[in-house]
Image (cartoon, rainbow, N blue to C red; front, top):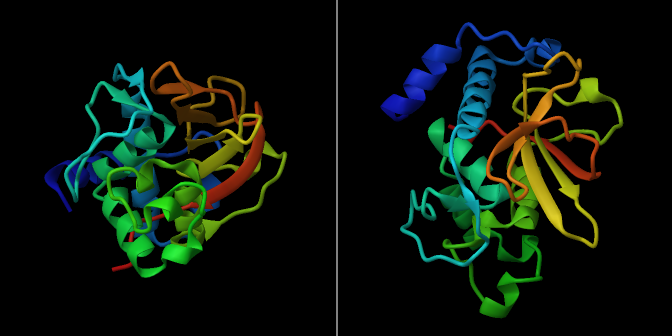
Length: 208
């Protein structure tokens, strides 16, 4: 684990969620700490200025990222996880190399092989990855079912996918907010039920 990841975990050890604290009460302490750190990392992302840019960019592997002042919704998830020591670029790429046919055909099958520059930056690929390696949680219309550290995907309409991270800042609404980037850079907003929910996941990183 990097020094930054260790610092985040240390800072978050005393965190108590405003909404949904019960959700992780029965989880191992290490998983509770991980989710707390992930929430802190996601909220920290809202202090960055990011221009929405879905362009294909060649990046290093592993640990690669598009320019820090650009990105899309998936990049906020990727950057939040990387801040707590999990490289989704590497994890998704390795899983796609082993299980290529498990992933959606729409883009990568024309290429014929996984592409570590872009595969992890596509919502449908992240959905399959989280289904395979995380927890798949119920889709409900009850706000209390969505807890800090959970990942939610939506259909914005016309099959356009979106993803965000649930955080523990309710601003008096009694509903957890979402950190996401839908075009204005990373924002923390009350948008959980603004669109059709298509996925609900929890991912603690690779098994040790």
